[in-house]
Image (tube, rainbow, N blue to C red; front, top):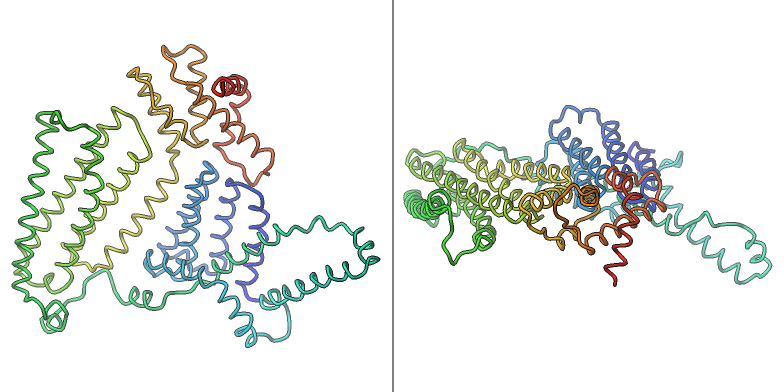
Length: 500
């Protein structure tokens, strides 16, 4: 039996024990650590690969995030991390975005690959001795046929039915069998990775540094047949001069109104100023990076005549970064007046990724890097952002900030939005609710609907705690439940009030 087969069998049993009829909690953290350890057990050389160490760290961190928060987002982040860990373990030298594609490809091919291994490769490898995955999988078919005949014989022979009725088969659960079989498929895909051949070959054959492109090689390209180098430089300079002037106007107007006048025109609201421009800004940044990729894709990187074009590109990138910082300032101005929301926090994440994309584009032009350099660095930046976002309790942060803002400025918070927050905000809401009840605040902002939602979340956590085991243990849930006995009576009374 191969090492992979042993690991799949063990991991499947652990998967069933940790996750069957459980919610997200410490089970994800334990499973993440175990799968990371299994990868090292298979190949200790992975410990020398920086890409694998980063993927393993991300996997364990997102697993801990599930243990701490137990939210759907942290679970999704951990599953993505496991997919990446599997692919990076298979080929640590591959780019992260190529690893992601390979991992998805592997899971899509899991069932066909299992059939091939059993019916084709298994025939070649089968020695008739020992137990291997092929024999285990082939055993499923006779067991299913035997079970069907068992049911038929019960129907055909009343005496056999009466005797077998005395056999307690309650321990056999069809749901558990299906759950375990699904886990087997998932873990087969984890340990038996495959590569999308064309993409993987292109990834391995292209380095971060752009190789020198001679005039002869350039003349063989598609673009050379359409436009000369001189025309391309002229077009690029004309475009970047116009874009720089245009963007300078945009940034200048922003600077004038924000720093000098410190107010918006009378007909323009703060909401319009922020929301109407953010989505267009992100699209413009993507286009900006695309334009740089087109002009600095090849021969222009190696000729002296392109130096003015290069400096225009630097200025344009810096101006784009300034525009992003201006938008971040707008967003903060809006938050400081109206409070936090998931969308306003998400704006910062997108803006940070936009800056990362622009900085790497600047490095590409300055250091003559390839387009693959951009894809590789920015895919890691996206993954780092995913890990960071999963490690923060954003719902609790939103609740705390908005309530602090309400008490400071004596403005009623958006309780409808607070009602939509997950249970991870419950400890914070309970804390402020108890402050109001104890008379430590001059104003009260907790209405009946918000208290009713808090009561509902508390009851849901209590119900989950009654029907799940230690595998679903979660720190935030424990913190929320620790306050529930003190909070429950008043909250339930408020629920009755809101219903009336």
